[in-house]
Length: 408
Image 1 (tube, rainbow, N blue to C red):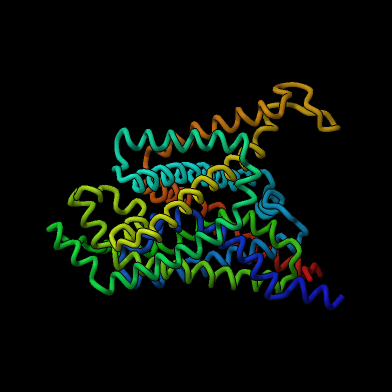
Image 2: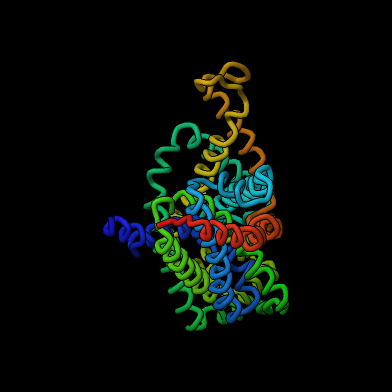
């Protein structure tokens, strides 16, 4: 019994669960550097280094509240957890709205990101007709993979995540070394461009970099609830601590590196220098192009492209699983008795609608999606996820503990 309890609360299991959070966070948006610049790097080096650690700390607290609440109640999914959290179970729809919006935005961002990576790698500007064509190519790939390759993508996702983490780490190191050597300054002089100033808005940096970013990253809560169901209270706390350190440090180091390159990248983009019209869209790829590490550029570009496509396929599959059943009515044995009875047809219809919506959104471009759509969904999540965790979650946890409920 004691051995089982020790395993449930072990650091090894905590690390495994924390890795689920890390894998959810470190997707294409993070690895590309786009949302890192949008929420941290453009405000300066100190902000870029410190705020990610603070924002991940805030998210870790919210995460711990929700995971502990789920464990004390014996819940293993987010729907039951949020239905019990709110004063009225029907209010769970508030979280569903947040979750659906962030998934659709994430797929659209991944389509735009993959299209941008492809354009950059081919040496063409990701604007106008090129943007539409590149995104259509990605959509065609998504349709094929959604029909035939979901299992392959799922099987490769873990390996892909590890390789993305390693390659992103290599990009950060290479970027910091090159920035120190003065490559950025030399390039500005070569093109006769002026370096951009950092955005001098401390209040905005604080609001967006800590509260908004933490709020829309609450998308990590559902997979963490599912992943932590075998854990005890101590193990859950350890998973949140490790998740905070893993995510905060990785985000902080990436933000710090890109803050060193931001004046150059934005300066070249603002001056409309050929080849740099979208320099800040996929900044990590642009930095590698400037540095000239062709082997790392090729390796990172392929991985980033695959990460974006993998994100699209897995999230579209999530949408299909969530909504295809709404297109039919079922009897007590689970057999479709009316509506669209064929499951494959239902799945294709949902996937087609989701892909069409996400393609339309993708034409906004990766930067607008991560800064505007993610941002507004973050405002919404502050109201329907973060505040409820403190207002209702903590008192309900104390009540459950007073009643003698435990989670090992």
